[in-house]
Amino acid sequence: MTEVQLRHLHKSYDGQRPAVSDLSLRMPCGRITALLGPSGCGKTTVLKMIAGLLPPDQGDISFNGRSILSIPAEKRGAAMVFQNHLLFPTMNVFDNVAFGLKMRGEPKAVIRQRVEEMLALVKLPGYGRRQPHQLSGGQKQRVALARALIIKPKVLLLDEPLSNLDAHLRLEMRDLILGLQRQMEITTIVVTHDQEEAVILADHIALIFEGVLQQVGEPGDFYERPSSLPIARFFGGVNFIPGVKNGLRVQTNLGAFHICDTEGMPDGPAILTIRPENVEVHHGPHDENCVPGRIVSHIYAGTHTRFKIATADPALPPLEVITDAASQRLYEDGAAVQVQLPPAKIWLLPETEAHV
Ligand SMILES: Nc1ncnc2c1ncn2[C@@H]1O[C@H](COP(=O)(O)OP(=O)(O)OP(=O)(O)O)[C@@H](O)[C@H]1O
Ligand SMILES: [Mg+2]
Image 1 (cartoon, rainbow, N blue to C red):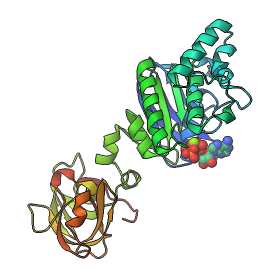
Image 2: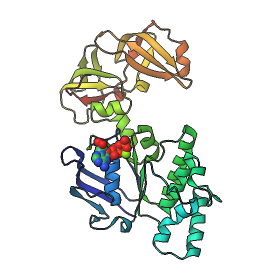
Image 3: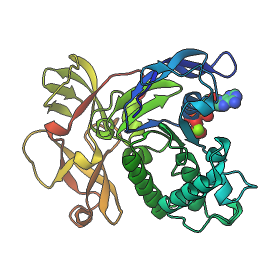
Image 4: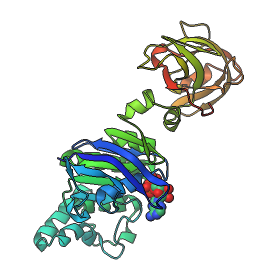
């Protein structure tokens, strides 16, 4: 199995603005790492450098501790499935999948057998004679995956593998990728701008903004322990209350809140945050960390209800709260409620210049 390591990687296309800046990251053997970030943040650029399609300006890339920068793309043992140009349009499915083995000069009988195996693996047996234009988007994605896997790569590079697929096909493709990856134990790097895609596919996520690595962790870390306000926002965080931390208390315009753990956060200005699904709503006063509020609006979404609740601080945007679906009947718009922020669910972010 292969561990991929990036060290101080730097790339600029125009010699000025960097597309990738001082990026260092270790991608463990046989696991799936997602490179996540908004459009244009440099994800494809990183993938192309690993594949050998683009030389870095500075830094190093190693497989199992050995630099691969001097090794040409076709000898690196990395296979890339591209964001857009998935297949060779003039070749049928068989020839597309067979391509890597033909380049290696494998005997015809071996190629035939391996292509059939791969097409069965991606659940497209008997599709060899079809032309790419005769396939659906999901089928093209699967042929592209078969074409990458047939060379038994050490490292699989997938650029936005679930984009352009509808919700049902996304789940099917996800299960296929996870199944094949686990079975073949290939170190896999998935690039995506979609946090949900990263969370459902990856063992680890590396979040990149504007070419700069922001946070690396397991999917849950980004929801529960984001390290900055922009990261919390990227993962759907909406409740941000400025305050001042003093030990295990945070003083805000809404009053003081108890917190459980500070994880090294120093005393002083901080932003208190809590995910909408962790805020509790009550009719009357409840234990600690309760503040009065008034229901501004609600959206019933079938599986849950999302409320906006105004607080005593008119300068603070309404808190957003997600409850079970049935709660819509319990709280009318305009109702006075108590909003509870359980201490164990509160997380503190460093105060920034950014507008809260
Ligand atoms: N060949 C190129 N020449 C010049 N600039 C480029 C080139 N390719 C990419 N860029 C620029 O480098 C930056 C990073 O591009 P990259 O394709 O790596 O982004 P990305 O994170 O993959 O985005 P997306 O999610 O939209 O695919 C962008 O600002 C882009 O405009
Ligand atoms: Mg891209």
